[in-house]
Image (cartoon, rainbow, N blue to C red; front, side, top):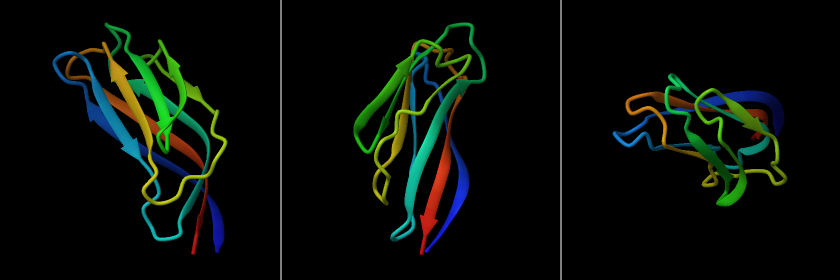
Length: 109
């Protein structure tokens, strides 16, 4: 097994109501992510989105700065294949590209 730093991103185009969800997580068999931080941002911020972040189904944090950008580091458990970091934006600019960026260490076989 080897451990290495990683950065992964997932994007979504916010719908006509300014809502959208982006998810990302480990995919390889026996891959483990120890997430240090998840950051969220949208391409435009005329309407500032609210964004909530969860990991493996557990609530991690929420921000009223989902468009201009914010981050959280409240991750306490590692993620294994099938568990996702998910960011959900509401009330942002329709058509804006929203980005979830996850950073930490990954262990792979």
